[in-house]
Image (cartoon, rainbow, N blue to C red; front, side, top):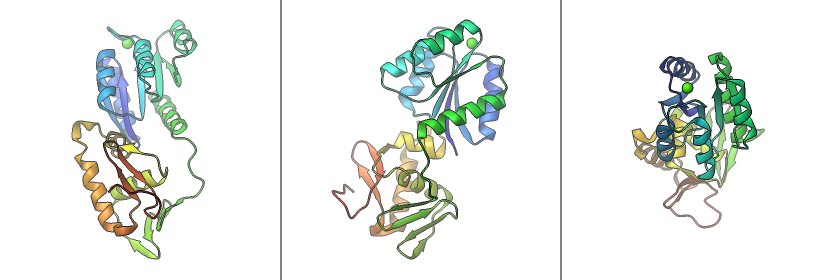
Length: 231
Ligand code: CA
């Protein structure tokens, strides 16, 4: 799963085709039809990117983006514009728009833009495929996890979850972020899934587990041998 994308678009035909292309590429998709619904969704979930139609009934796309940025939400935003004058408004207003695409667009091109925006937001990938935190090593090219010299068997989801945390040691992820970024779900599915998988990874890694619980926030990966540990 590449993560959850919020698609804000009032034309059903465009919503359907974009959902199809994004799903095929491994993204989860939540589609909403108005600016009001987009803001409500953003307060509930943590998508990895937002595709935002400019012309919407009620609150338009520009206002949605302005509100997000005012609320300190810097999720990448890709605007869909219908006219050239909208491009000028979107890119000229210092809204923190990440990119735009003009209608009619090729869905393939849209997906490529979404991937690029998500990649930029994630920052540079670490050069090595092998991640290490404390005694735990995780090799993304061979899908092996080890504690010292011992191999540990993780399911695909457990592996993805641990890799996501270990790729940015010390960074605290909320349950909503992990659901979106690892599972590609919205929180409609419940964040209990995250807790259950965290517990499984911990029990398999034992005392070497680098997963820290940050009370009231979420989880991060840190060397259990260093500093305070709130499990
Ligand atoms: Ca529209």
